[in-house]
Image 1 (tube, rainbow, N blue to C red):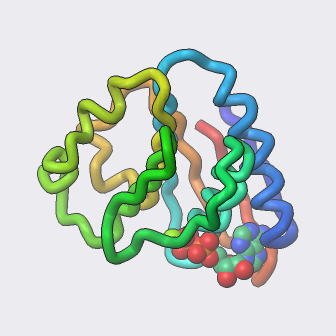
Image 2: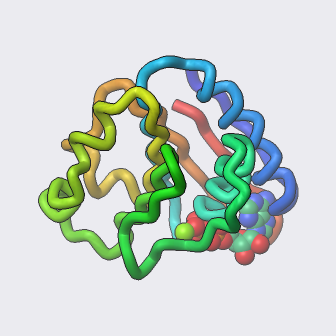
Length: 138
Ligand code: ADP
Ligand code: MG
């Protein structure tokens, strides 16, 4: 089932993410969320709200230069600088996603599509205008 959400500003994107995180937290297997969308589309903003929804108190910063950041059972991965799936496997990726306690959100997830599980939740971000974004849940 596809669902489209339109947000009018950054705060709405964070709020949407926060609610979605609470829903996803109810499921028992590991949650893998793949985010797709151009630079500035709102992926990192979304993840900040998502982390808050999971109860993570620490301020989330963008991992752009490090690929992976871990906050307890929450993992923020940014594939922007990755060439393919191989590099990510070096991060014990399979082990991380096989733990049902873990929640993993991945920016530029299309770059590692091949190694993502079939239950991955795909979110597509689109810039509609200066402040408006479309978030499509696939
Ligand atoms: P990405 O991680 O996709 O590159 P970011 O979340 O880092 O995107 O940046 C999104 C930028 O767009 C921020 O500067 C944010 O303030 C701005 N913005 C404007 N409107 C929105 C919106 N509706 N949702 C999310 N971000 C928005
Ligand atoms: Mg980003």
